[in-house]
Length: 252
View 1: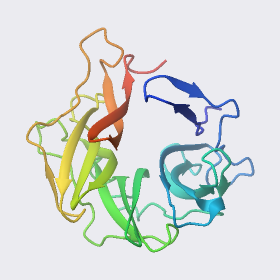
View 2 (view 1 turned 45 degrees about the vertical axis):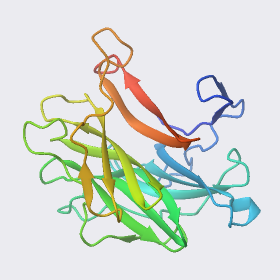
View 3 (view 1 turned 180 degrees about the horizontal axis):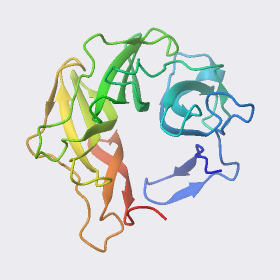
View 4 (view 1 turned 90 degrees about the vertical axis):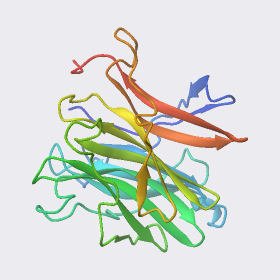
């Protein structure tokens, strides 16, 4: 059975990567637990104030109940390679009629002062749209979903992100929150590109008029179907993005 797992690699320049020989570093459960079918879409941060064995913190989407549903789990590590799962889920999908009734996935977590803040994807079973919500936590385990969710939603019909606004990655630089996210329109299934939005509070977001800021490649390129699922770092004043590309649709 096809399963997804979480792996680790490292690089001195962000371009040439060496895969860790001990991969995967976070595996599925094999006891019929909630994450027995897949673990994926991770967010990792280094918490310098945490105990040494919990210095690295990971939130991930786990899959078991059906082929679409994901819930969130938490794991911790002293080195980013040896992970201990927190027992059970730390966040689950909403009720069937909510904006996140189908699945949640793609968490992006940062620690802002003493508060953990998460932006994440939710699938709406009632209208088939994929939007992004927000939650906060004092410890990274007990999460409170924002009552006004979702905080950033799909565009109007005809716009490039009219079907999905998903898999966000958020950075706080100074007093501003910056989000990169995957979007696609209703007529371009699996044709995701990457958009950008900014916010002063992490709740009210303004999409860039230049979206999508990272577009699919030209026909024949390795990323001519998808250029999305971004992760961004600020490195010595330069923003650097890693993203997923796809050139075959659908995958065999």
